[in-house]
View 1 (cartoon, rainbow, N blue to C red):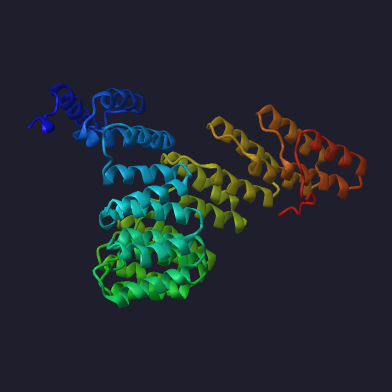
View 2: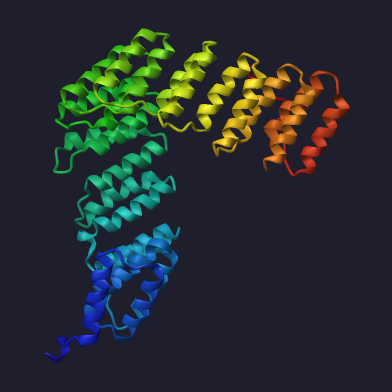
Length: 442
């Protein structure tokens, strides 16, 4: 009996740690103090409370979490499988994959491998983050089964994400097909399909993505709004609006509510084809379904109008958007600036940049480059130099792209001495140019 006796003070401390951990009431500093206090009186039953504290510290500082484990190992407390899982996670997030593998070795030696699915997942994520997905595949397909640790959906989804991040979506597609054909208990889920569909679309494999989407439906996997929006976006980019509308109808039939992102894809697609009547129809459908346009919707509208030489209409949308409580972002201002630049409306451009500043949005280098390029196109040298001064007054020193436009302008009009002087000033300011010649977009 005496071997199982837990001192009252220690039991109270352990219960207090458990309660505070589950309530989310322990910060890193508190956890470190509690760890020091507990370790002085810790016994075999203390490992759960220790795990709570190491987890808390490891979240903010994985390296510190590893050092706490080392102190546990040298104390009179035996780490359990969860302790090693926490250790592997900390090692991986601290960038010490080698230590993570060493800890995994201990888990295998202690006979915990069969229940170490979470531990393996930490390793898999770290391996894929280092673009070594082939090695991660070997762990899932060969090593885990060797130790009777059956990979789950989470394991496979890590592989799908890793393969797609490495632009190996075809291999991800083959892996999905292998899982389906194997017919085991672990089948692709909606996250699996979403990941591979997205990967295929990013690599331009729109046809394969659509086919996989159809296979997903045949397998009885219900898509979500992310899946459908991805497919609709892909179809719109290749101007297959009939298929995009098909997927939209499938969404509605399955009671999957399209969101603003879904409708934005269709709006953008129809604008690319110049089919404004269809855009109006989509806006009406959005309204009927209670979906409000967001900032991206307005940006798409304004972009189309500005490129069509209809800046006045774009400005009305800009003003109405503000009236509806939508806050324009840098992209919104940039779209309108590009439109004004095309129309050579320099006064409007300056006023818009001033409005940005008034609204608490600092114009960045690309924003000023729109204005600088427009002025350079008209060989307005003094105006360009004034813009440089204005940038500096706002705490923004011109960058290489900004200098490149002006150097190009001065060279073009034969002011080579001034061009060289400006080039040298750029070097003095610590900017290292790669390509100075800049081709203005207008």
